[in-house]
Length: 101
Image (cartoon, rainbow, N blue to C red):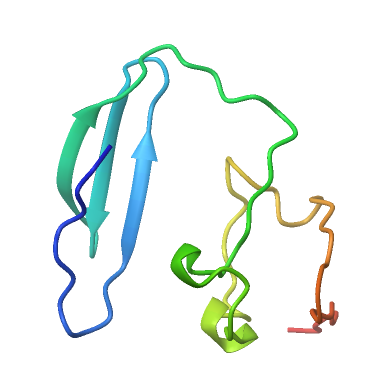
């Protein structure tokens, strides 16, 4: 769908958005809109999907660590995941540790 812009030698923050009602899809690089295209206006995403957080799809379930996921950062309640009530399934060698901070 997109040919992503070239990444520089420093850390880059990238976000992809898509709006079903308009079909507008965009890539944001370091907080600035980079590319916008139209994609499948009116399409609905089925429920019961799966999301993998913190993994690079080019290195699926590779050598990442919890530090790679920026763990410990507080984030507000989102409109995709409610981090306070979501039920997570742990796979592989991952471990859930409750934090007091």
